[in-house]
Image (cartoon, rainbow, N blue to C red):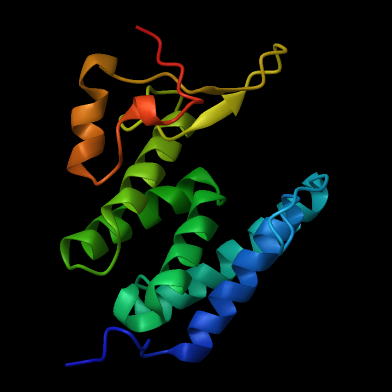
Length: 173
């Protein structure tokens, strides 16, 4: 049985972590956690390159899950999918769902990608994880939520805390 603390493909893990750092840098997040201005053109370029690289990884290895690349790099793969186009997100959603079922990905990642896909499709989200700046002067706001009265129950099912614990939550009823 493989050692769960040591990824089977450490070079692949390093590549995914480098790609996540580039993703975050383009979005203005610096290594010390500080924020700088985001670079929209750089984001477009990095997202396209990262999506193509993750596609190649999936074609060769399947979804880069916990045993293949370790937790941090598996999270990096999810982040790349989160910032990809809708067609790729839909494919990744099926792969992450399967990975969760086999203990190779965290259910929270599936919840967040599910919400991102629903938001991209202009549908209410299920888990209350996605925000959008509607450019109305109120900053980032929670994207519409399906059945807000049962949101916390759905969140608990996937290991997310109550929505009220997030001070940014503004759930429309």
